[in-house]
Length: 422
Image (cartoon, rainbow, N blue to C red; front, side, top):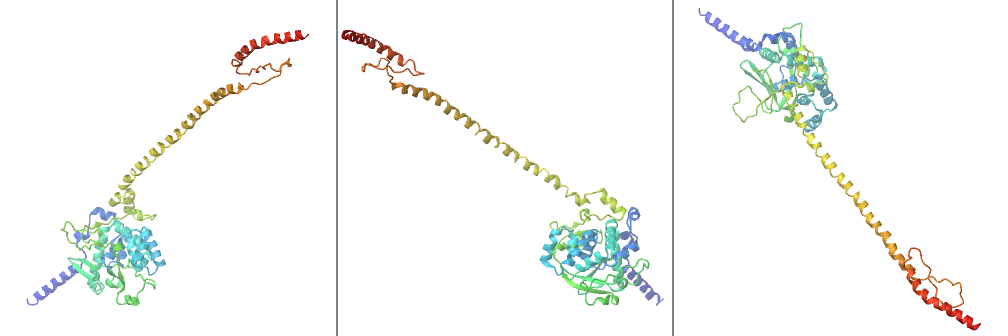
């Protein structure tokens, strides 16, 4: 009887330890039957693809999951980082800004080794993104289950690089100081203990020499090593967080520790949604995801907001175009019509008085008489009649009538003188 109590106590202790390291409870891990029928990836496949990144810090893990849904931009960012080595700080922010990548992809430019892994293992990256879009809840639960196995194996502990927090079967991995992130390099086939899916073993990624830490060979014995320290930029990082209880990913500049915020003035986190515009021409592999985003070409709920400004922008150019033609048409006829009648009316009165003036000046010219020789010609005292001028007949006629009676008596006198002399 004395031995029964210690044995019972040991049994209770073992049961409690098993529950502490066990995965999430069935109520959290299981979902509706419709979700399970649409799940494109089995549990062994999810364990296989999430094992290489499940021990990343929460913020870095969220960036990788979101960026995996945009494989084309991941490849572009990896090539950009390779072509611009040593670019960091504000210079990196200025260089990345005009690229137009999704914020998650732009944030990973601060971690070239992570981008290189996602670019080299492109098939794995595509499958990881499809799994997040189709089975987000199961993906989140799988990460917690993998962390629980690593914690039980002794590989996941608080160190100088990270702080491991266990809160009611939820394991958080946070940096000791905000804004300082170390990337772990680890061997998935060691840190989780004996791998439980022999047909689906996870891959061990060996980084290129330029990104490989000097003590990287220790991953084959110890299982985990740390890369260099990275000081993240808040403008590129946006501090994303997986909310492990409700399983979405939120993006906010303030950390979220799964607590209910009661302050009304506190900033609310933004729930992340996939944006098909950054997908490019890469087709979705799984039928569930393909049907979801083909039925809604603009994208999920948050993509409905961009079409709203489009009708606001449409009426804006309309009033801008309408007023320009009105002022252009109104002033155009006024200067063209006004100067046209002015030169036509003014020259007309100037031409009319011109023909009136010459007839008034012409009667003055005939005042000078034109002397013509008389046919008789011997007498010098005879007066010469002025020749009539054309156009003024009434003026010279009265003068001739007055002179004619004076000249008539002169002629008989001349005849008398001629007869007397005879």
